[in-house]
Image (cartoon, rainbow, N blue to C red; front, side):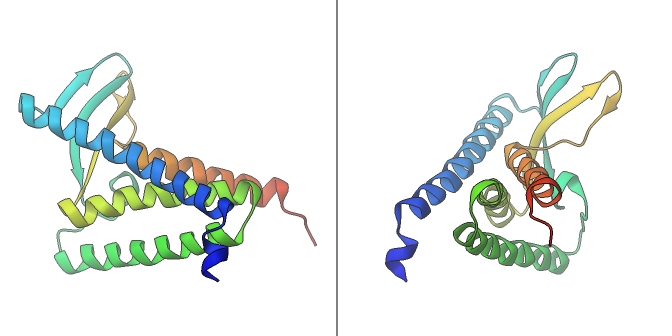
Length: 162
């Protein structure tokens, strides 16, 4: 059992999850550093992109934000359980699904770490056109979104239908 978990394919999968996690952590640490150094939340501004630090207590894109501590920690526990399930799915799938689960797991670990360490998730990427702004997000959210889109694509177009 343990030798199967430590196979080359699984080690590569774990390495990819770790690389996604590290990419997310480094970007967040850098933005938090800039925020603390310059004491401002808006760190960069252009015609289509702002780098602005906000602290998100909800889930993806600030949804389900609650002020109640017990709800916050219940959601955090649920995210931790789902992340464990995603790890199992990585080892039980192949092809596009495997890499989709890797992206979602790496992103989920990044945001889960922040929820535990900071009691919220630092989001900082703000795409906009004129005064129309998308939700502010981070690199973990990008990986999660791409992974979910790939899972949907796989399910609709690649799964063999019975």
